[in-house]
Figure 1 (cartoon, rainbow, N blue to C red):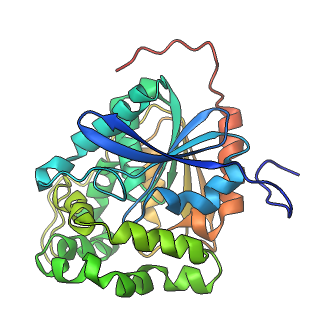
Figure 2: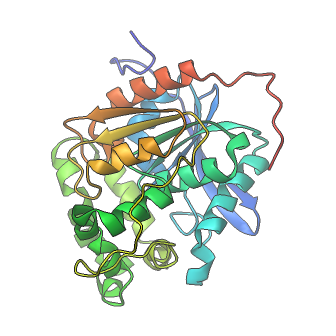
Length: 315
C-alpha cells in the first residue's frame, strides 16, 4: 500500500481553517497533514477546499497549506483591478511563506494557480524546493501560444469575454445555482465531488464581491488575447528556459482550455522537468484522477527531497 491509497477505515488528517495577516491582507488557508511543506494554489473559479480530493490522499505525507488566493473565498478582496496584478499575486505567496516561517516549500498549482506557481519559481527560485503544475504553463509560454497557436488562440477567447462588462451579468453571486451547474454538474454526476464539496463552493461563490475579484485576475493579467483574425506579432520563437526549479507537469489530455502543445512548451521552459500525461483526465486532473496525481507528486518529491539542513537566503 502506498501513502496515496485511500483504503476504507483510514482516518483522514484533520483539516484546520486559519487566517493570517499578510502584507495588508487577511489570507485564509486550510492546513492539513504533516511533513515537508507544500502550498496548493487553486485556479479559477476554485477556492482552498477545492483541493480536497487530492489533499485527503497526500496529508499523511505532507504539510499541506491551501490558501484562498487574493480575492477568493475568505481571503481579503481589494477593490481595484490593479490590485490583482501578477507581481502582487507573486508577492502574496512569498509573504505567506514568510508569515508561516517556511523558508522553502514545494508549490503545487492548477490553472491560474499553476501560472502563479511558475511565476513564483521564476522570480524566487530559492523559495521553491519543487514545482508541480497541473494543466498550467509559465506566463510567457501561455502568451506565446495565445499569439502563435491558432487552436490556443481560439480556446483563449473566453478570456476576452471574462474581461468584458457582459461577464458581470453572468458571473455574480446571485447566479450561484446556475454557476454551480455550469462548472460542477459533470464532476458531481461522475462522483468526483460530494454534497459537502458542492456546499463549500456555494459558500465560496456567494461571498460579497467574490466574482468581481475573481474576474479581476483576468482583467489585470499581463496577457494579450487578440481576436482570432488578428495577425500575431513576430518573431515566433519559443521562450528560452525560464524555470530553474525541478518541475513536475501533470497534464489531463482531455483539456479543452489548453491545447496539448502547451504541455510540451511548458516542459521546454524548464531546465529540469518531467511531463506526465493523464489520458482520461481533463482540465482538472487532481479531481479527475486524484489517486494517480497523488502518487506522481509523492514520487517526484521523493526524488527532490527538501533537506532539513538546507540554508535558504530569503528573497
